[in-house]
Image 1 (spheres, rainbow, N blue to C red):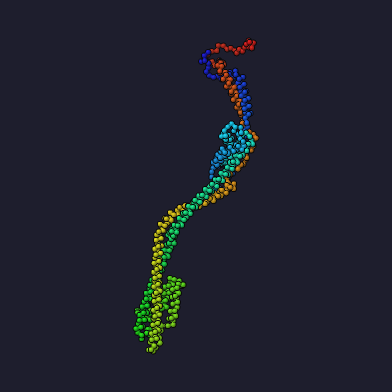
Image 2: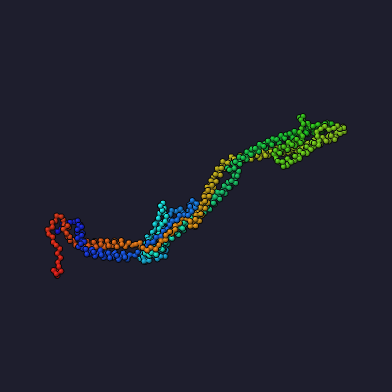
Length: 506
């Protein structure tokens, strides 16, 4: 029978036939595999898991009052702490302290032991209803339950200590940075303040904020100039009047000297000027001069006091020698009358010259005052005209100063906030990690799942027996039944399975 006569389809009946024919082999292999699986699973060491719960306690004081200087997201802080705790130096110290992986370290490299410990450590976040981290769990798995609990608590404490240290370091670093910035800002501010002060000293009187004072001063000078001009006009008029009186007095004196016989009549009659009018009395002239001086100076001014004394003396002299006609005198009384009239005229002449000198001094003073006021007004007007230029220069000088002053004030506020935040960190009042549930000593191992391994070992053993039995039967190449023949091949006869007895075989 050729190979083409066989049905190429792998029939289920053929598989069942092969299993039945090799049932003892399959059963033996499956039983041996199950026994081996049981031995292996029983020899697997138990694995214990211990877990510590770390609570994320929020800041006690509201950030509205004391803003925190640590603004790193919680996930990022935990990730950073994980990198630090799972570093080679930290894990190496934990392995050394608890003598972990004692047998494994004999046959593996130190890096492999560190990597295995990283695999045995687990960090899991617990989120609140607002999807924010409220706590996280630190777990560790190992073979010794007591060591597992101790390692889990050690790692949780490392997270707590690392968070406190990191927050304090960040707060202190922020405070130190602000202190440096504040010192630099203060030095810059001092330089700009010195520049502004030098500018104000250099252009004092022309500063923009002095515009009101300059305008007020200019108005006052205009009023003072007008008053001084009026006083100058009065002084000039007084001087002209005094010079006129002096001229008339000198003319009267010359006339008295030329006509001795008329001396008594001239002395008795009131003095008449060249224009036919009576000249003013000495007291009247002194009163006019006093009025001019008091309009400009106070009562304690020396010239005012002097004129007041002269005025009193003139009034007393006029009262002692009234201007009435003297009694008749004999002819031989001419010389005495001439002597008395000449003395009075000389006194009056000296008084007029003195008053003219006072008026001249007043004119000179008023002229000087007018020049001074005019000069001050000119200078004040020039300062007012230069105000726009000074305002522009002042803006250039003070712009950086104002910016630096604002920056310095902001840094002062930030320094105060940083100091308060640092005190808050030292007082253990900020957001922090709290070991809410320390890792307990586990009583029940977490693994391995022995029933599962038993079932898996038995299944694999049975599968191995089936594969071995079917392979052995296929290797023989026998026809297992008529179902393996092609449909067009007829079956002519069926022969039973003849098993020779032991006797016949012998």
